[in-house]
Image (cartoon, rainbow, N blue to C red; front, side, top):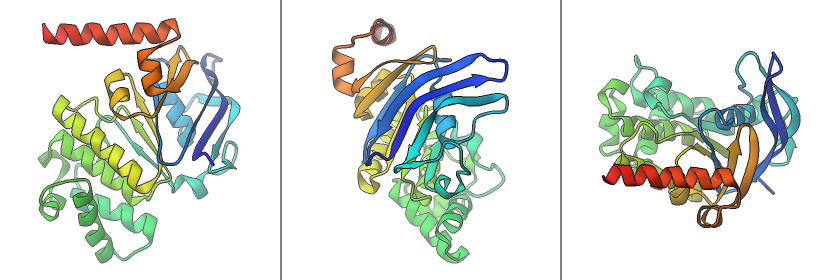
Length: 259
């Protein structure tokens, strides 16, 4: 059974402007599926619709969203939302600057696993170790501003793991990181996905990220799904003109970066 199924999803503004139209895809347990497109193509709005957190003035106009076979389109999602986790592109914006990071992870553990505060703190340190943070007990006592961007993103992944998610949505999770740290974070996501067998929707504009992490990929253009398929097949033999444009643009950026 698919972890997530999105069928014929449509999203529009209150003024009637169509943001997404007839978008369909699925994600299996242990699979990373990419959602690719330029800014404004509807990538993030798709992930918000899945989470049930569409912004004010935006609503779903058509389609269904199923999680482990359960239709959650028009119901209170609290029963399944506890099995969702989301990672954003600017981790410091998602962390409480006035709270030690270990305490933030511990709160997620206590909330989702129902353990005591003391046990939650112990598990929080274990989660920091799991996401490869050196000296996790010491790191747990620090505030977000005392950690690098890569470390903060690892904290966000630890918080996601605290939810024991069946579905992880990662919205441009490496955009704010340098190349070396980006590769480390992506490797970590792949490893953890295989370990816990969650499904991952990876929202990105970076085809290099797709090549490194994704099993399959969906290409969005102006709110429409224009191409989808196995990642390597699509990257090496794109069928749609827009996908070829994205690949050509990525190659030009790579060449310019080497110049």
